[in-house]
Length: 90
Image (cartoon, rainbow, N blue to C red; front, side, top):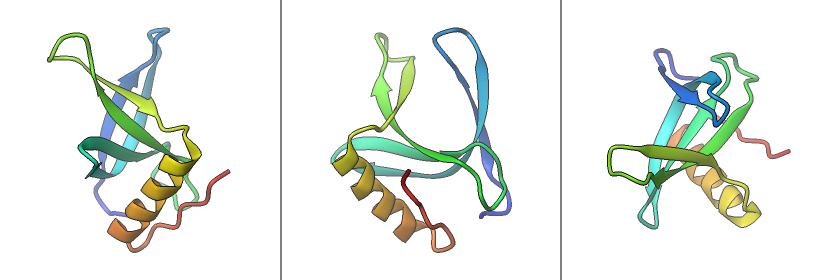
């Protein structure tokens, strides 16, 4: 994993705040994606999030990628961008 990772705090629909480590960001087909992890440990749980424009231009929403084909393609992209990352899909 990277040495100094940025952290980002997400607020759920219920108002709960969840902190993630941002491992990488990429654009694919005009869309922005983040690879985030719940810890900075080697065996962390990771999510791929898709950036969605909110109702106003100041708001950005991130939603988990759930489409299997999109998830598989993005996993390969992130593995190429980060040499020391191996993404295992569950």
